[in-house]
Picture 1: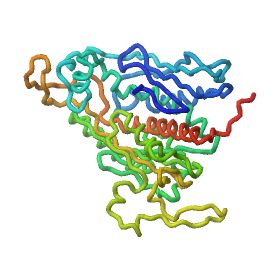
Picture 2 (picture 1 turned 90 degrees about the vertical axis):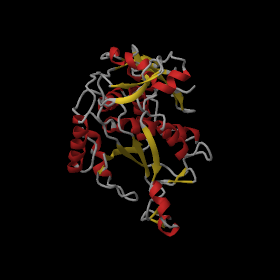
Picture 3 (picture 1 turned 180 degrees about the vertical axis):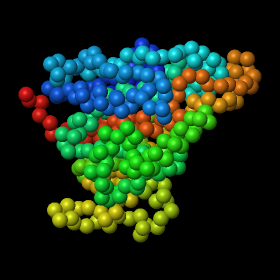
Length: 370
């Protein structure tokens, strides 16, 4: 199913942006695991719309409900079902787009594929709203990874070409990275963050939008996680990241810039550290070689496009009348979705890494006993 992800830690999302509810069904969890209510709600709050001037004014509380799979605060072995009721919908804003597709949205190919039966309201199942179930599932995966001392960090690498402080790939400042989860705007350098905010507000004033990049750093992964060729660590992560609406590119380590280097510059020399652990002096490979983790920090960047819904008049085609027609998009939209995508990227990273570890028989070291 195209709405399912994972082989061992397996999830299926359901719902649409303006449906009565959205949610996720998770299979593969053993009975007796503590259920991390607070961690899930905290992550949802980081992603939630309607909080800041640089996000959409759609105001969803995003309070989730457990529909199945939990008894007395622990998993019971049955599939886990978590749901969020949609509340603040304005479906009338989307009526014109059934036959008048919005540029850079899925409206036109969906109209052809589903013969006009797709849900146009809020983008239907193509909407970024569908990332909320991913955050719920990812919060559980992250909780389990942390029991094995695997930590996931992320920050806004750039917005509108304005870059945050660069991370040392070989020796990241984990103290600074650990503080990002408590920031309303996830940047290391707050001055650069302020410049990003100003760029977002300038685009909003122009009825336009901007995009950017999110960088993920994972610490504590054991050596050898991944299943080459097609279930390699990069393949799993890239596949999942492109399942997040608005993703336009994924790179690891030095990424595309590595194509401009010589091998002598790009190669990462090995050495033994003080604990006789094999490390590399540099980390151009981003913690993955041959599809397998190397024990160095995993470094991944995800490019997020400018929000497609902008307030400026744009050219389109009336599919009913078969004529060119100008449109102006109504409704409430983010001038930049990058800040709200940060917890989504973290969640998807956790889902993929937990599934890979389970494939390798490395279930996180967690006790299910009272």
